[in-house]
Length: 360
Image (tube, rainbow, N blue to C red; front, side, top):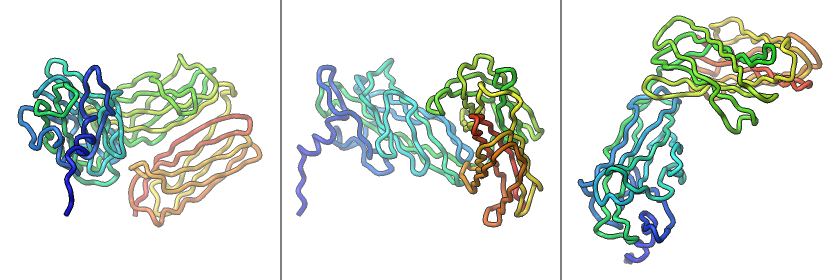
């Protein structure tokens, strides 16, 4: 017969609360309705006096990311902790008072209530498949005496469904950066836009390790007409710079495009040109390119969900034009992005992205 050890259970959950003079290990997962029964070491039953809720977009396109919030109100209103989980999608931290354990989120140390409310922000990335996903959360309102007691009460949030839809907010047909008189010029074109608030141009000076905002350009909302965008980064400093686009919907969902690179120490006359024909195609298309100098060209092809489906590498001993053939016989109908990244032996770094459509 299995034995029940209440003292051991107490030790497991003691870290879920804190006292200002006593520090316990903070954070715990596995408590939500996804795979747990709540904060049962404090009280066996959930309490309606504590209100826990998740807020954020209720629908996202495949592979896109949006910000969500867990809010705890009511109860002892001294300090609070939380646990959040997703059935299928990916959760990530966007709040310094939260951390990730395995695939779930929890607090780093319980937060003190402000005006009867505590909040944690986090990011959720939708799966690549069309489906309905579910977000879960549980919140504890503790009295701060340092021990699990009847004064600590908790509750589950209502399950939060997220519809993952196949609509692509923005169909990017090209994305590139060049140096013009020492100034990075970022250019991109869209074939169509849906619910597009705009583009944040982000810059990296350290090889894509960290990113900073270079500027913002308003989107076209919803349109089936092509649009062209040009952004000049007059404040750029450094030699080798990377750029990416953060496209944001009106509902807060966002996704990234890029990165592309430019080296300001190289002459602006060096360009990478590329195209594919036919486009649309079935199932073979020819990718043509012209390289400015000796180096290596990496050709990477991604589907609309951002998954890599094909890659190829071309080496050149000098300025050269060439072609490579992609046979998409084993790929499904849809939009694909052909990303070309050239690394020259003279430290030239050039990138270009082409949108291509496979019609079977």
